[in-house]
Length: 242
Image (cartoon, rainbow, N blue to C red; front, side):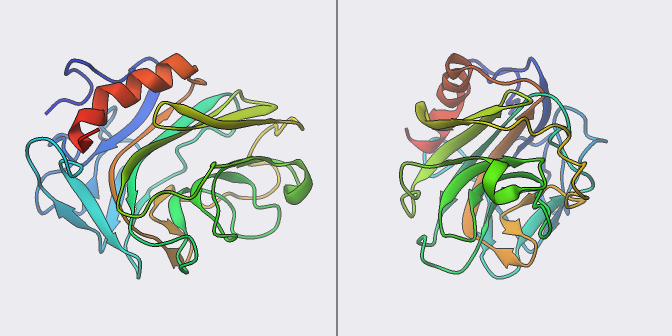
């Protein structure tokens, strides 16, 4: 399967990273690497513990990686989201634990201490499901943050997408629907307040792990419009029975 070329297809303009559990150019059976389809030599992901599930046809997420919430994750060899300028980040994920459970995860490259600078999309420390961009020293007061309208439904596939204009505003989407926006302090260079985690982590946040399944992750170096978010969702939703 070519996730970049089949019709309908996801947007390729500005795409810098795409891992897809159903694309054999991204993952081959028995490998310990989840490859970036855009450039297999860039941002390769090391699979730790996660189980790949091959599924043909429609529904149930097609193929995906299963993460047990104990110690499973995929980590890239470097940060993927740009330190400066606009970007967008999306993930097809099915959460298998309630918001009150102990794990954290989704997509994280945020510093685990200090200014907490960097990016996260998923379950944070307050059991919320949020998109956060922070490049400032005053993380609590000046970060850009949007909480989802509600925590993901356990056992349900959904596409979550966060977009950032490169300075003062973010938007957050579930499938085709806008969850909210935030605007405020210019975040500047996301690396200036300290070193972000030197990996781009799926299903984990440092030593905390999320019980979930992940099928597809994409990163763009542009801010996607609402219509482009819809295009990407509609291109892939049939795999998930939606």
